[in-house]
Image 1: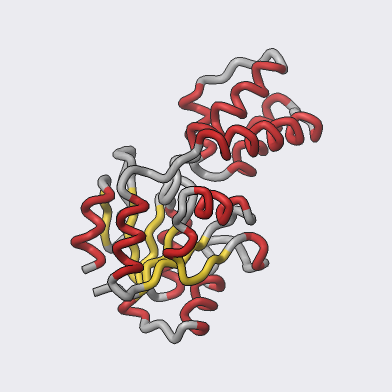
Image 2 (image 1 turned 90 degrees about the horizontal axis):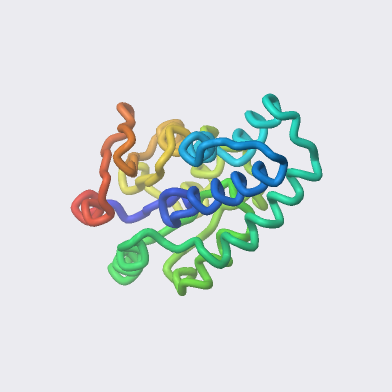
Length: 205
């Protein structure tokens, strides 16, 4: 049984990628640039910074574009982004069965605002965001911090994420891993791969 469940945020707890990609596409269109939603989404699933860098190299988008996009994304995210179906329930289940949820994301405080908005904040024991200043994934530093702080046994901890970076970060820290996929692929080094939130119950038990 896993007593310590570490969650990624974007694409794992909350369905944010389509909203982020749509806002980016809208700003590109304001510049007279047409790019497919699927293509933008593919880069967005790596990271926002990766997406910006990719299109900056192609279209030489400037800082003003980035500022407009960031502003628009933050507005639309808070309005439209929601937890994936079943996420609130499983986080509550973990919390009420005397186990611990932790958040580990490259986002800043916006992740906590989402959790508060959907009444999930109370289910979490601790939160690692960009504000903590740890090296980015796949560095194990943030996970090792949680392990040390809460005296976590490695075989009782699992990281759940939707990207290779999440899995590598957990592997580098010596804990178990679960790759959450929308059906677009698998992660061969993850201990588990699931495409349905309901399947997580049998894994964490």
